[in-house]
Image (cartoon, rainbow, N blue to C red; front, side, top):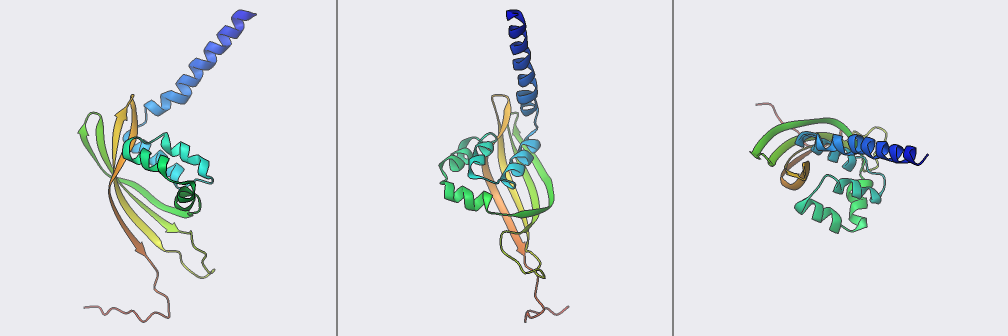
Length: 165
């Protein structure tokens, strides 16, 4: 009977290693960025910041670790988004262990209360992140650049007009 327990434990460890860790090691830098964003944009509680830490190292990890719970709550948990589009714009391999990923994210910002007839502002952000390979796993190290634009719909009462040339 004791042999069966040893075999069962060995199968469990092997299975978990293959299922839990194997997929993570096989993730490309682009997939790591996408997984990080999926967590960041869908957080429901502050404790989920540990999930963000699984994908980060260096400056970004330090910033998330040191952020007070109130900041994490306002920045991640209380924000609401309707994702419209996500795309990788560019990948620049710096070395075999370091790459930069530029991605664009378009979303409707639903974090403010809107009247039923209001259209939420559409946000387009383009970010470049440094992704490095550490212990055979790609990790986001730093945010290198950020360009954000917000499109607010013009209300019917607006005095803003533009004449065609």
